[in-house]
Amino acid sequence: MKTDKRLGQHWLRDGRVIERIAEAIGPHKDGRVVEIGPGTGALTRALLEQGAIVYALELDSRCWPVLDELAEEFKGQLEVLRGDALEADWDGLLCGGQVPVAGNLPYNVGTEIVARLVTLPKPPREMVFMLQKEVVLRICARPDTRDWGRLGVLCDLLCERKKLFDVAPGAFAPPPKVMSAVVRLTPLPAPRYKVDMGKLDRLLRLVFGQRRKMLRGVLKGLVSEEQMQGLGIDPAWRGEVLDTQKLCALAGLI
Image (cartoon, rainbow, N blue to C red; front, side):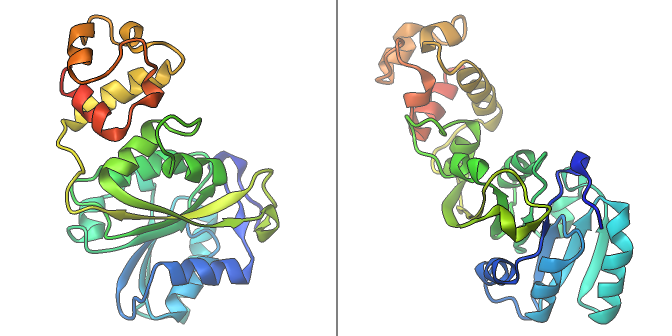
């Protein structure tokens, strides 16, 4: 089946990579797993063969007949959900956060899907995703680095983050022009720091939307220089040097 560039599709075909992703999700004999973007079912089959009960969420209608055939082969183990991951009823799918989520995420919306899931009131028990390597580096980034930004702050605040392994372009058909990587996100019982998520999101969009500007300019009219200094923050700093704790404290002043 030809991929649809509008959906950011690249079919995973390397059997060893598929096996490693399935193993990374952990033992799930008779356990539920939600898979985002199963496509033609390569990872889906590996999960089913391990005994998982898979809820496969697929937007591309061309893939539905292929997945329906797989459901017939593995009776009672696979339910094909026709729809968009960004519009799904995640509260229902995740049973109060007890279900893991996996997937080879579409390149065009992968970042948005990760941000949506980690900020759910009851997020997945665990997430194992394949994404562009540059996105995984942003998820796992540390302060005062080129990759540190909104996505890294949210994931650090709410999850344990671990980059598992790289995936070369040759593992896909057609091969993408960039490297991919697999990451595991394990939500924490509670955020590392107490913060109003709405205020934090506003702050992060301001700070990292103008990352080369000094904080005194970016936050003018929202937070005074005296308030920043009270937190041990130099108004002449750029926002990218602040760690998650300092950013949460700064958000509390908005």
